[in-house]
Length: 79
Length: 405
Image (cartoon, rainbow over all chains, first blue to last red; front, side, top):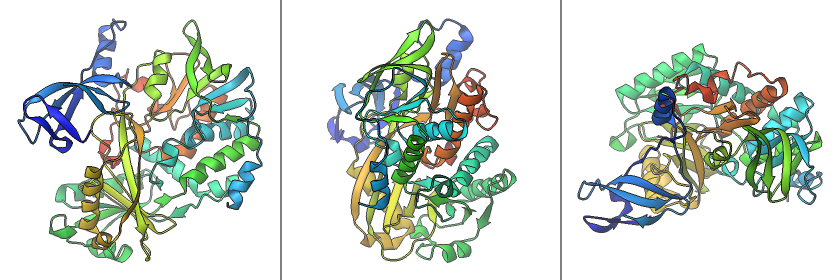
């Protein structure tokens, strides 16, 4: 995690980046509208493994990008 | 080796033997919370057909990685009542278990460096006093008397405007708390299996009826997940959706400081907390890492930023050296309050959402969950912390009292 390859700026120190969020996915199995709302508002997939995330290059190009990161190892898989 | 560890060695550890095929209660996770629940089930409710399973050694997770702070100065009445019960139980834990846990009441200061935060801390004092956690608001001069090492100008950037002071704030040796509960639980007849990883849950229809482990399948009346870090994985087996994200929280100690540093000091403006261990080392922590992660890594950026905060308030810290760093993975709930009790999957209970605030809650959570399992009825003290609160759209939101955000 010491360096992150920004799609615009190339390899930059990790400290320049800000974590945005994961992609919230409400499981299809939940069909009730109220329960889907609760799930959207509160629940987390909290995936242990490769996860799609949004990151922001705060101290660089100041653009958002999507990255795939393994939460078990903090390894960047795909940016 | 000290006397306590020697007495532990004489206990009837089950690590060498096979688990029974059936237990009334199977607890996943041999940390403070899991072992305390087993202890109170066996000693207070006569339920001794209990086993605790841990993938590694007991206390190897967050119970052995926290900054050992015990306090009850939270921001919502239900939390203050719950943590105050825990704080009181810690005070008598040595007497109850007969084990020295190095409990020491130190008082906790929560610094305010801005007018806004000063108001927050004054409100905290009023609210905590009303809910049974004796506190007072201190002026900078009073703070200087308690902790003479402080630079009240905060390096010029963070002037100390005042502080809330929780009289009962304390620390205890975390390993010893785990061992005290393990020893008590074993003596009362509970089983503890170390190096026994749970690999899945056994289900009969929608009901959880047991666990599969690296030592075979175990049937259970109820299964309690007292897992730290990997709770989302365990809950997925039970089809329970959780409002939890796992984050890394780092901490570190310096070499020994030869003078006494009496209280626990926290600052919400700086996001930083510090206390002195029994060995004299200065023990520090700050915010958890922003990105979700199951990785227990530490990094220099964190050490650098926390060290800067430490020196801002305590210039003497500049002469100390960092001795040891570590990290744990914390189940941070989306409303920053714990989740205890039943789930919608029958036979499956949770003690989770302990985020960065779990150590202080061990005795209260363990005793209340034991009561819940024994009486099959949720005790009033933990009823507000049920997972079902999210379905009712009632959040126990208290991020500012975590001290790690």
